[in-house]
Image 1: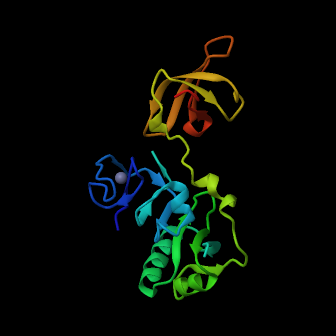
Image 2: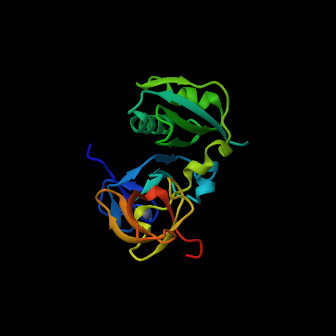
Image 3: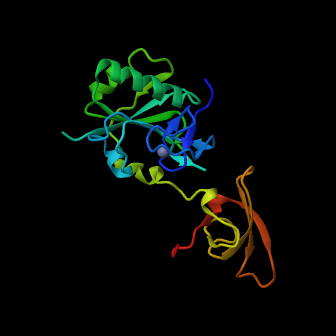
Length: 62
Length: 148
Ligand SMILES: [Zn+2]
C-alpha cells in the first residue's frame, strides 16, 4: 500500500488528492504519529484536539 | 461513563499496521473503542481509549504483532502534551526572528536566513552573539515568537 498523505490543515490522512474531511488539496507525504478516532463524541482525545469527524489523522505534519 | 486509557505493547515498526487492524476489528465487533494513538516517541506501544479493558481485549483478539494489554490505566495527562502539535518547519519564514529553545545557544534570539524543506533544517543568524554567527539546526530547536 502506498504511503498516504496528510492534510496540512486538519491532518486527516488520505490516499486521494483531496482531504476527505476539509476538502483541502494542501497535502503532504511528510507526517508522523497516528490518531484514529472511532467515536468523536466519546473520545477525550478527539475533544482535546477538537476533532469532530471519525477517521485517521497524523499527529505531526510538515 | 468516562472513557479509559490503556497501553498495548506491539512489535516495534508495526504500530500503524496494528492500529489499523484494531480500528477495523473494533468496528466489526462493535467494541466501544473510542480512539487509538501512536506516538512516535513511544515506539512499541499504542494508546487505546475505550469504555473498558474488555472492549480492548475483544478488539485486539487475533491481531498479529500485539504482545499484551499493559495492566493498569493511563491518564490523558500522561500524554496529552505529546498530542499537541509542535510548530513545524513550514510555519517559519525567512527573515522571521525566533527563539532558540535547545542546544548550546538556548535562550538566544535568532533570525532565519534559510529554510531547507528537503532536510527539514533551518539556518539562522544569532542576534545575541557579539559577531555574526550562522548555524543550521533542526526546526525543533526553534520556537516561533510569542506575538505571532
Ligand atoms: Zn483536511
